[in-house]
Image 1 (cartoon, rainbow, N blue to C red):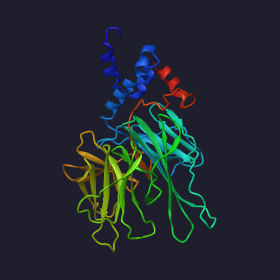
Image 2: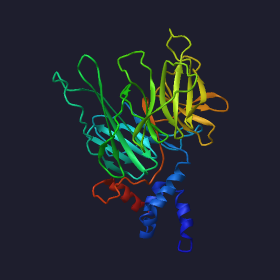
Image 3: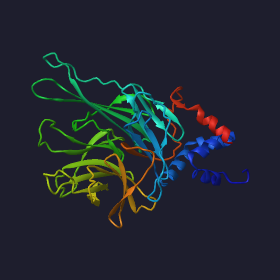
Length: 392
């Protein structure tokens, strides 16, 4: 390899999977230094983001409940592979609170949260997030906790991964008043901090923000007890750490349900409509995509023929060709939607997962340590290193 220019070696290595690179890092110190360098990690990340995505499935009916599915395509029937993650517990499932650029935010409870890289097995243990809601009311009663929502995303301007926790309380007096606190954890600098401008909205349900366009996005309202209160689309910009409202699509007819999703790093709005309100069965779903601060209707999915109807659809990822979109149906099945033929077909996976939530992932070498040299920040399963050595 001494006769090959370093830039050529770096270019070849940047196209390899993480598992191969971890093995090569055991060959020599110069090779390890190359693979560990920030420049190479960024180049490798850019290459992996243009390759077919892997899927992370969080099963809802298993104790060991996080699986990966590689090479998911419209022509293959992949087998889910159980992942041994740092929060495995025998008595209940671990929650996946978000995924971003190959990293996952996983949780067992408020005091057990990790940012985890499934490719390298590295993880960061997060300190407990302490909220300090407003003081007691004049009647001496403190605020009651209503919900805690969160999210995980990437601040492109600060080159930083951030975890967000939003706590919301209500005062037990005659007039319901919103108390909200927004906390952000920076993987680059460590530690929780309270944002300057708290969330002035009521999140409609205990849901995690959808990361797209550099922001975590929610559908919210300002008057939680008023049924006719207008809904608002809002995003927490991870660079400025400020909440910003966004418009809904023009001529947007009121759907019976709508949700947010991310497709190809763009924000999507999924609106479900009914023809016969008495049947309460969706007639079709419209998928809108945010492009340059305006909405474009990407496609429309009509209800499946026959007895099986969907109550919820969510776009997950594009196919390798970009001509099909993988859809999650009711958290139980996958469908492929053809953008050319405007038709649906079932996508099968084996493994007996009958209730799950899907996250997009890919190979990445992104480290999780702080840049200030603190010890004990990043941990790795030592079995990965031993496996690399045995395969050499």
